[in-house]
Length: 339
Image 1 (spheres, one colour):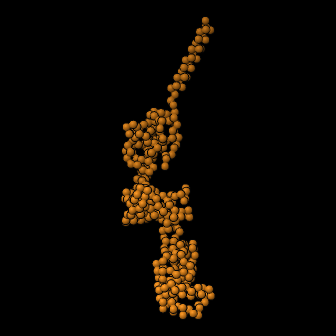
Image 2: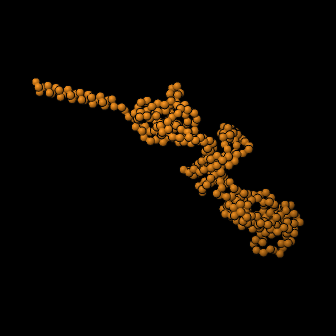
Image 3: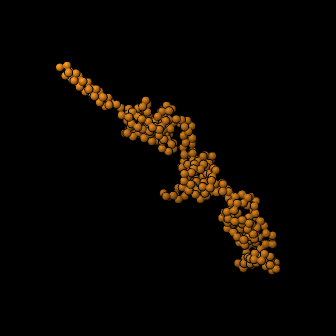
């Protein structure tokens, strides 16, 4: 009998222990892994995204100041020049009275170019041209570069003639670039000179250039758009520290910082949910558990929103909390909010 009692006692103890173990496992809380973000005071920025085209900022066009014929050209396309450096010499001519007198002067030039000496008939030819109103008796004059830079858009060769106002070449500073933007009339009030901007474009993937608002046009104009016509204002953005990767003619995007607010607690947009009544809320992690915190948006920024509720600095906010419920135990991993 004693042996039976011992066996029954052992079996009873085993059953009770097993039940306690199973009950303990069943009562053990479920732990969910979730990414969290620690709140901290930061500078919140409002930005305005615009499209524009890169162009040379310091560019001067060299145009004919009178009717002339180029007698000697000292530069070529793409050449670097300094301010005051000689570009070409030219001979001033009066307005041609006929095509024949133009040809007379050019024939003189071609003869001089071929032989290197002034033909014996030069005085006779010039006199004939002068009588027909083609040539002036002045000596050739020299045209110099207005700025230091690179020669572009060279439109003349030795012996070419040009009428007053004709563009002959441009000289531009390759290290001085700007972006010409078209800003809609509804947004222009947010733009002010001196505002900072970030410039991106498909022509230089993965790179971002810094810019600064240089000027705002005093007039608005209408331009064609996909929806018809829109009223825009031209804004010039200076490119700070450009490199060879950003080139004139590129189409770019400029994100202009229109306002900055210091010491703001920004909640990432990916952390905010809304219930059926439209009440927005977030989940904080407190003592390892998810705690629901209703919030009221105060202001939206590019990288998050501020709320009217006072939240403690250093609080852990769950990112992408879909599926999280109040009281869940959370195993946190460090996350990064979406840009």
